[in-house]
Amino acid sequence: MKRLPLAILVAAFCLFLAWSVALRQALLFLVGIGLGAVLAGARFGFTTGWRRLIEQRDPSGVLAQLVLLAIAAAVSMPLLAAYPTDLGAALGPPSISLLVGAFVFGACMQVADGCGSGTLYKAGLGIPLNMAILPLFAIGSFLGSATLDRWLALGALPPYGLVAHFGAPAALLLTLAGLALVGFGVVRWAGRAAPLWNRKLLWGAVLLAALAALNLVIAGQPWGIVYGFGLWAAKLATAAHLFDPSANAFWSEPVNAATLAQSVFLDVTSITNIGILAGALWIAAGKPAAVAKPMNATQWTVGLIAGLLLGYSSRLAFGCNIGAMVSGISTGSLHGWIWVPMAFLGSLIGVRVRRRYAF
Image 1 (cartoon, helix red, strand yellow):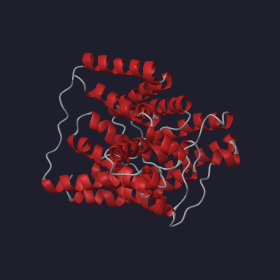
Image 2 (image 1 turned 45 degrees about the horizontal axis):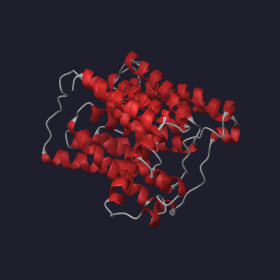
Image 3 (image 1 turned 90 degrees about the vertical axis):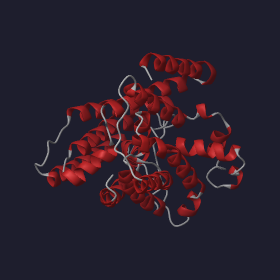
């Protein structure tokens, strides 16, 4: 698609949101466009950064992610402390569900070549595997939400927020210290095999942090991906009379039941997800179509199964690289710090599976 007709469609949708839904939703759509454009333009892949560290000892992607986390935390934590009733942190309970979900997600994102945000922006760029995975991700996220209560019954602790327990200054100091320690370990492990910094990724980190802060202020909650996916599939399943939300622990909760009953355009996560797709489309517009490596039937089968498991495991883990890692850590949630090592352990397995099937 050319950029002019795409710009007309984006402008029309934005006006529709502002006029018929809410000005907030129009603003969040614009934030989502910015997120998608930065992710696609900088090729800011969380999955790729981890894989390059594991396989090539290239720390530049992971270090850029640490910069993103540090800037986002420096902005978000004071805001959460100043406006505790208006803004919420991305809190998730430390649980068996979190441990299993993060590990499986880390493995599957390497096989599927994308986390939540990666699947979105690569689908927007027209990459066939990610386009095929996107609906499966949504189905998996819905199935994960529908069975989440059974996983939590295996053992869970209450969510723990650093800002609420220690205050913003101490929470930020602890977070920055933790990020610095991780960065030191990454640099030591990588050695001198590759440059430490990538300018494009660093600019991407700064812009993503700024946009994530805008999302927090406008939406009243941190940037997320997975909830929107699960909501889309839940709406379709409910409309087709395949699912009774009133009989399900997750979707019968008042907040989730209300979200399921109302227009999808009122859901803040869905609007930013749509914006990310639009932003990636803008980057791809007017350029030659993305050339993907041909895949055989076995590769397609493994990739699509990984995509379904991505959605399921991300719901068990209370988020993906965005909802659990970026938003969780930057808003002081303990579960984000648990998610990262478990997902990285999963990635160690995932890169081997990816290599085994020659993705």
